[in-house]
Image (cartoon, rainbow, N blue to C red; front, side, top):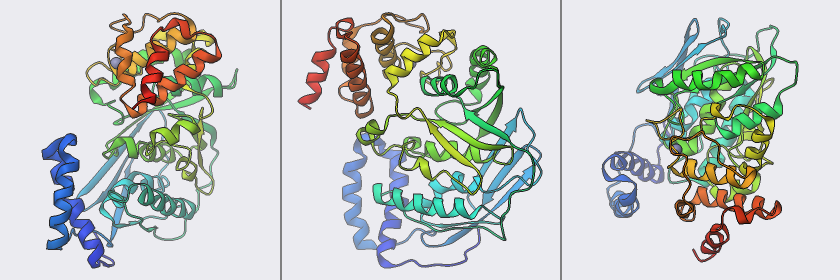
Length: 403
Ligand SMILES: [Zn+2]
C-alpha cells in the first residue's frame, strides 16, 4: 500500500471508526440486532474520536498477469480473476480492476490508484458512481477519486461484437434468447464466485446449462474470481462489470441482464444492478449494456416458455447446497412457480419439490424484493385475465396495501 496522501478530518474520523467497528460488529451481532447496536455505537464514537487508517488515503494497486490469471494486490487486499475458454492478450487492459476494487475503496474511503494505465472514461465514471453510492448509502460508502499510471490506449486488435453474461437464471436466459442473432455464433461468460455460485457447484451449473447454449449456437467463457464484496446485493453490478471489462480487449461490448424493470428499481432500491448506476459501466471504447429492463419477470418466463427451450436448463434457485438444481421451496422458487402458473397455466417439472401451496406465497408480502415481484405477477395476471389461476393472489396484493 502506498500512502500517497492523507486528509483525515474530525468528521471523517468519526465516520471511519464507525465503519471499522461496524464491520466487526456485523460479524458478531447478526442483522437483526445490528441497527440497535449501531445506534448505541454511534454515540460512543462521537465521544471517542479515534480513526480507521485508510479514509482519505490513496491506495495503489498492482495488477499482474500470468497467462489467463490476473491478480490485483495491495496491502490487505488480494483479488484474483481466472479465465477459461478464451486467451487473454498479454498486457490485458487493467481498467477492469477499477470496478472490482470500487466497493472496497468506497467502503474504506480510500482513493484508488492503479499502477497501470487505465481508461480515463472508466476512472471518471467510477468517481461519479462513488458519488451516487455515497448519496444513496452514506453510512457505508464514501465518494473517492480514481487514477492510473501513464497514458491509456487500447492495443490494436480485432474484437468480436459482444460477450453476454449468462448464469442460467430467468433474466440472463431471457436476455440471450432475445438478444441472439439467428445463424450468428454467440459468446457468453459465466462467473464463479458470485451469487452463491462457487467451486462447489460451478461444474454442475456448467453441465446443466450447456445443452441450452449449444442449442442457441453459443460458446462459453468461464470466469472465476473472489472479487465479490459484501453486501453483494449492493455490489454485484460492479463485480459483473469488472468481469465484462476484463474481456474488453477481445469484445466491443458486454451485456448484463437486468434484475428488475425501471419501475421495480425504485421499489427495491438500493440494489446493485439497476438502471441508474449501470449506465456508468462505460469506457472509451467498451460499454456494458443492460438488457431486459423493460420486461417484468413474469413476462420473461412467458417468453422463455414460448421459445420452446428445454426448461430443465434453468437454474435460478439460490440455495447454495442445491445449486444448480431448483429446490422448489425457497422464496425464489416459490415465486418462479407462481409465475409459470400464471404465464403458462402449469408448473414445469424443474423443481426438486414440484408441489405448489398457495399459502407459501404469503412470504412474498413481507419481503421488499418479493413484494415487487408479487405486483409484477398481479399486473401480468390482470392483463392476461389469469387471476383465477392463483386464487389467493388478489388477497395477497390487498394485504400489501395494509403493510
Ligand atoms: Zn429454491
